[in-house]
Image (tube, rainbow, N blue to C red; front, side):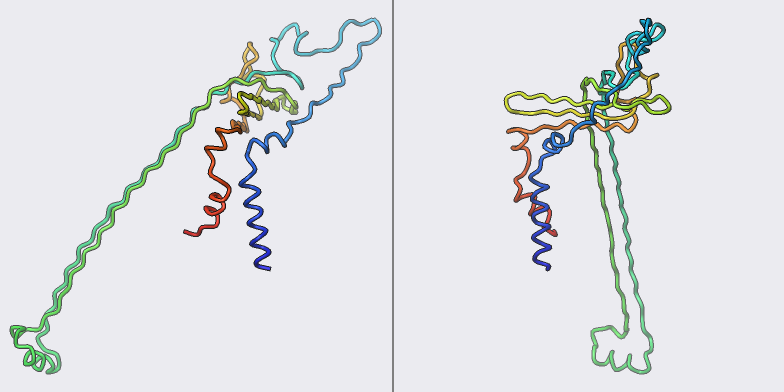
Length: 228
């Protein structure tokens, strides 16, 4: 049973280690395109219903399902943390014995080099010094058009967009999802990524360059099972 469990875990790690993130993105489709059923105009009417293009008193920007909005991705994150510890302790103890139930005389007679005095002493020194420093940063600048996949009850828009770029058999994927407010969309029908709630931005790729940057599957398995 233990051997079978270990074999199953080994196969699971192997499958996970050999499945690139880009493959999972391709296997996971985006939200299906909703089919909007618009009311048919009544006989003799030329008004086909309000949409993002025929509004007389609003800018032409995304408001309805399947409308397009341009996302300006400006992500610049940086963080750091540092710690320092420095402690020290010095201890010294000296004790003299003048009488010990007569045993002191016997000890002095057997050890004439003690100078006629029994003394016990000790000293210790303890010190600790530790420092630590960590930092992390990332930057991503891009433009991506996303589609409105749902309109919430309060009017907020659920958006989702995906772009695939292939150059010399090297695939690059950029995916973004989140929730935006119509008030944050500019008159040019753009919105920056800082105004996206529950934002999920993925920028990854696959190809020869990506394969060379990743360790082999056996190395990843050894790193996973190695206890030290």
